[in-house]
Length: 415
Image (tube, rainbow, N blue to C red; front, side, top):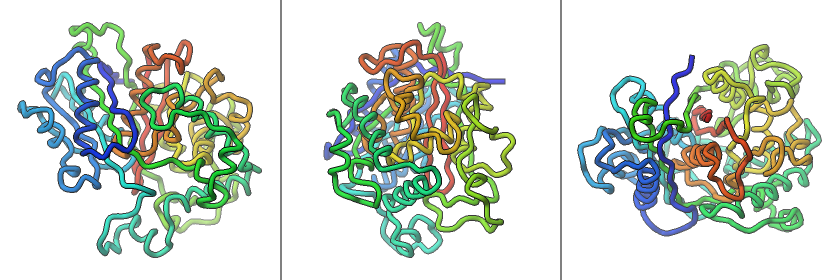
């Protein structure tokens, strides 16, 4: 049984490096979402802020920071931090309030002002923090993990750097059509191959940037939506915020060790698949990889499967990681991701476009905002207002994300 909520409004601040406070980006996104919903800020009884630790103390209390910047009006306030999954967790908090009858309509906002270069841990000595440990003990930056993922795919499935480059080419072509994207120029495979090596085999153009940006949604119950002029809104049908299952046999960012478990064969430890393109079923696999369980929970809650999707927005921190998401979402069997991108299946105009927004390849990471930005893109696609990047006849979409410390993140939206 599903319990849908409505997306009344979606808004974003363009991604880039703007040199302003994260609250400034969040306010722009919030006002755009409210205008899209046809509501004023004073009409909203609750706000949920997706938090950023880099914003200092105001970042930790993002909900109140956004409420103050918009103008105090007495709204219930919630702040959520779950690293890259913060946006989905914020949606989950808002949905819970709506379904519990605590609020008819909720504003959800996430924004970030990111540092220059790749992310690093906060300062201080924190030996119980696995993110701090993997930097200090292993020297394992995020790109180092991305390179390991890529090497594993090359060893198991025969993927090549040329396959990875095709993901960037695809996403850059979509991003060139998105006025909110930071990078709006097409990129060729030759340009990817000529960019500097960062973590072999990945090059600079294989890895997403860090960015400033903001995104916001206005969510409500279906009765409220109908009363306020939205008889057929985009609906959020599922939000997956699950954690991993024991045992874990595949190394996964940011952990530096797997659970103690018998060695698994590559086939058993590799990504699982569901749906008509799969060779097996997630339900029949005893210990699927974490990312695959994120998707499974979303599909089960929504009562949908990958065969029902019109599009997907996934967490392309690197080009190779996007290919893994294809498999974890059940779009193909394990090892089949590269074939999908080679055949144009996941490009605009393909059978199932992935990252029609342009993805993080075109936006960069604005951590608390990116899961919300994914849902903004689903909303515009399902409304049929995405312009030159519109997926024809879009009726259902999924987002996929992942945060530090075992935070899952997926949202299913339908029309």
